[in-house]
Image (cartoon, rainbow, N blue to C red; front, top):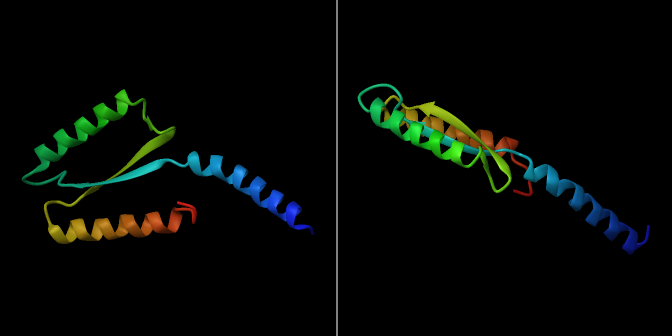
Length: 98
């Protein structure tokens, strides 16, 4: 196999992979106190986020926005656990190029 042919295949592979990566949703994790003493503040922030997303037509930079909501219940250990879960889930589902 010639070097030019191999390089051409590599470029073609990248050209086909880029649109697939761009079509993946942009995932944003929200860890807030949806229950408990500060639930009202979390609800107001959540409503503000929803309003912004509606104005952006649910897309940013051509990618659909997907929110992952977690309730910390006002407990710091719960927030830390949820953050670790979201980071680990993102690492296992993300592509090597991102």
